[in-house]
Image (cartoon, rainbow, N blue to C red; front, side):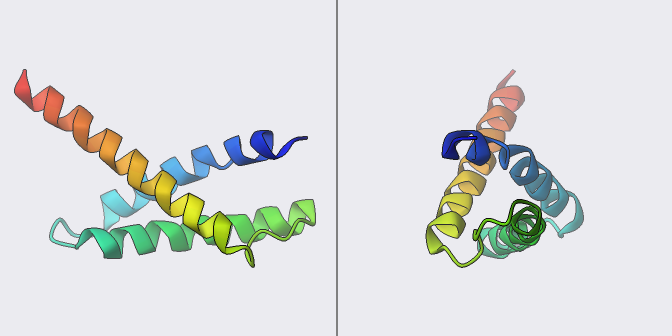
Length: 88
């Protein structure tokens, strides 16, 4: 399995982490705290994947950086959709 295939498999975990954080943190929580919370969940899930695949993911800062960018993109997309829906 190539790296892209492996990377794409993390997307559902990112979506779940963002959704979980949005549901359970208070509305007034700042975005950096929400992002850190989502990343903590994703990194925990990656720890399980790391054990299962015997691949070193957690010590690579590029993995966390990429996950943060994905979380930001997911939140931006969700916000854009909500704004569009509220316009109609």
